[in-house]
Image: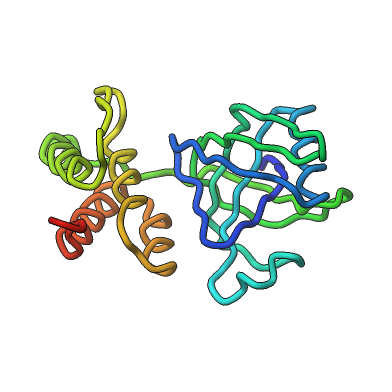
Length: 194
């Protein structure tokens, strides 16, 4: 298992292939960014469990499935804050380990995804693209190598979901089940004006 700094945030999930802009201002997390920039630049973004969002100043519990990310771009302001772009790499299973730093650390292992069955891929891809088009103004062209699993994640991020619903879809490692569940939610909750 590998180790990485943990950045616990309430109501934020780091999906693979998603770029997440973050402002880092707490001293412990500024230290985390500095250490990460001196190393491989990888951070685990862990979502704080429901009911513990107000404990973020301490060490609130996170869900066991988190997002491994890499700092894509960073900018340090004069007061020491960082603006970073965290690029989602993959879902990972995490377990907290002792840390000698101000921030928490986890060991992580990849969370393998069950791919969409080849015979269902074209139909699901077409439905996901159609759903995204209705929920995204000026949707850019999606390259063919962008997987339907990533399209499902893009749709999940555009749905008006409650914490538990979003976490449930994030934690679904069967890409076809996640895609079908996202499409069902899309149909159940039409976009505004639709």
